[in-house]
Length: 97
Length: 170
Image (cartoon, each protein chain N blue to C red):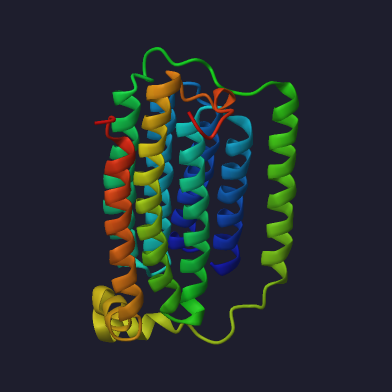
């Protein structure tokens, strides 16, 4: 099932990339990033079946980083929303306020 | 075709289809719900790939914690009701779908040229002798214990940072 899993992982990653390009809502773009991280995790797990348990260990670290990234990113989105009253990335022209 | 292959294709189809639905729904709450469906399907694929502990972690961390955080922020910003449709125009559809397909084709060719699964399944005997949790935990806390500690510090930093960024100015 190695090849099939890698194909599914590639499809999920491509869907995530298309989502980031298609959407303007910062929160949905964030969800697409989570989807891409998941696709990479899937390929790690698929390969770890033949290459040893280290792939699964790395997935644990990726999940931790994803959780930290979601917390900080959503905090930034809340902070931006307070200022612009919107989460549309068209409004985010300046890094300072 | 045996049953596990059939189940694999079922969940793979659900994962990809709900991923596509996720990026095309206008309401962010629906997007989050389809993302939950994708994450559960990926967890099911983990089970089929002998990563039982990671499947549990996937459900607890992603579907349980991260998605709740997303839904909570959507609710907090009241985006479930008065959201503005945020899909880009025609040009970006071509760019997005085109680039997505190109990327998929590249990864597909890469996966096809990957070396065939060499030798037998190395994970199954390990899981049989140590159990699903022990097989992951033993190398994690013996060979990679420094990385685990650093990850803990990272989580602490992220937590403090999130609180500092999200709180109103004092």
